[in-house]
Structure formats: structure tokens, C-alpha cells
Image 1 (spheres, rainbow, N blue to C red):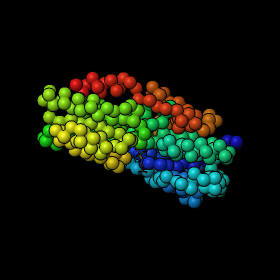
Image 2: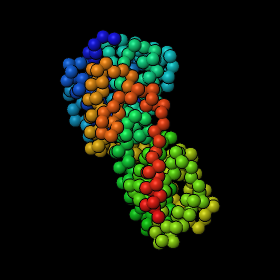
Image 3: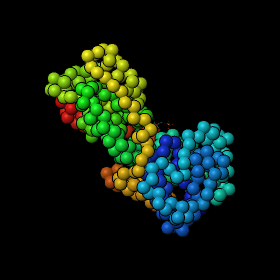
Image 4: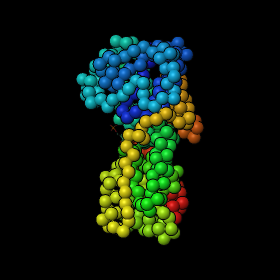
Length: 324
Ligand code: F6P
């Protein structure tokens, strides 16, 4: 592997707020080093079809505050095949791309890992997902913004729940991880969070709600992670087993993925983008950039996508102490 003189950058999987700030940071940090930058459109789909454009510093002007991704994204089925990855490598050769920077979640970084194990192309991953489910970083790009969006929505639902004395089951995203559910429950003052990392007993949940009613709480909010049947499933069970409760469901959906990135996400993405170029300069390959205890770290991608990132017992305890 010779000296790096050009990088390709792509966003893949579910978009997350702050991806644009990361694209801007990678582009500018690479140009600062005198390297060429190629923007690859529609994730791995664009890498396969050759949907690639050379970027200048102007290409990333005025995007730090925009949600979504200017490079657009995809969940590419073709890239999961040997033939698809062979075509992707042809594009890499054609444009003279010396290293690839992939911004995305679990599936996207696993794809990068696959490519680099088959071809001689260094890859640096940036954790871009609202789910916060990647090992090796305290936060992923987009998580803070999504959390704030959820809390804003739950605050609004609180108003109507209070007015009607209702029990609300609010479903949030997170795929198989309960970070969004747990932390939004704490931040919004919810009664409970149902997360995939720990089991939920419906009688226990009903006991919490009844306790609240006895203490003349005017409503109850339960945040439900989308895994395990989601809010509908739990609301139906509650309605059938405890018909005295006036239960409603609200599924927040894709509103959670959009919007202007928070300051924290913009800063995180900017630091990670610069660190990605630093990592390549140091000769690192096949690592994900993370921030742990405010320090930049490089984690092997293989670990970032495989190792569990557990939800701390302390968080679970905080919610249960504060919801009495
Ligand atoms: O990974 C981000 C995420 O928003 C998850 O929280 C959710 O389960 C999934 O993507 C939805 O994916 P899609 O955009 O393909 O519907």
C-alpha cells in the first residue's frame, strides 16, 4: 500500500443528522492534506455503478446544519454479493481511490469490513446512526439529535395525555438497541421504558401505572423500543389485561431521523471526520473512529460491529427511582 493521495467517501444505511457535517469534515481535512476527495452517491449502490464526483471545499459549503445526507444513501443488496463487491472495487480502481471512508451503522460498516478483507483497500468507518448501537464509541453521529427530537415529541404528547388522563405507549426507533428509548424516557420524565436489553413484565408495568394514579398523576407515559412487537403489542396487552386504563399508542416513526443536527452531533461529526484523515495518515486501516470519555479512539471495525454495547444498570436504576 503506497502513500494515500485520494479518498472516497460514502454514506450508507439509514441516514442520520450530522452525516453532512461528517462529509464536510472528511472532505476539508483531506483537501487540507493536499489529497483528492471523491464523493460517492447512494452508498454502495453508487460505488457499484460508478456514481462518483470529485469534491472541492465548495462542494461541502453550507451543509453543516442540514439533516439527511447530500451524498444520499441506500441499503444495497448487490453489495452483499461477491459480484457486487467486485464491481465496487472496479470503481475504486477507475477513480484512483486509495482509501474509503464509510459513514453508517452496523450493516454499512460490516460491508466495509467485507470489502477490505477481499481487496487491498483501507477503510475507515465513522459511526453514523441514530441507534447508538456501535461498540467503541460513547455516541454515534445522529443519536443526540434523534434523542432531542423524541423528547420534544414526548413533551407534546404529555400535554394531551394529562388533559385526558391517558396512558400513552410511545414507540421509538433503535432497531435492537434501547438507548433512544431509555434515555428519552429519563429526559421526558416517563414512567417506564421497554427496551430489548431487559425483559418487561406487564403486571409490573401496570403496578407502576396504578401507583402513579394513586399519587394523582394525571397521565402515564411508557416509551417502547421498536423491537419485540413495539408499542401496539404492549398497549394491546395492557388494554386486554387492565381494561380500566384509557390506553393510546403513538408511533413516532421517521420524524426521528430528520431535522437539523444538534450542536453536539455537528461537533462529534466534525471531530470524527478530521480523525478519520489523521488515522489514514498514521497508516491505520479497517478501524472505526470513536469518542470515549471525550478522547478520540480507533476501534477495529470487526469489534465495533460485533461486540455488545450494553445499557448501563445505572441508567435503568435512574428511571425506576425517578418514576415513583
Ligand atoms: O438504523 C437506523 C434505523 O432508523 C433504525 O432505528 C430502524 O429500525 C431502521 O433504521 C429503519 O430502516 P429503514 O429506513 O430501512 O426503514
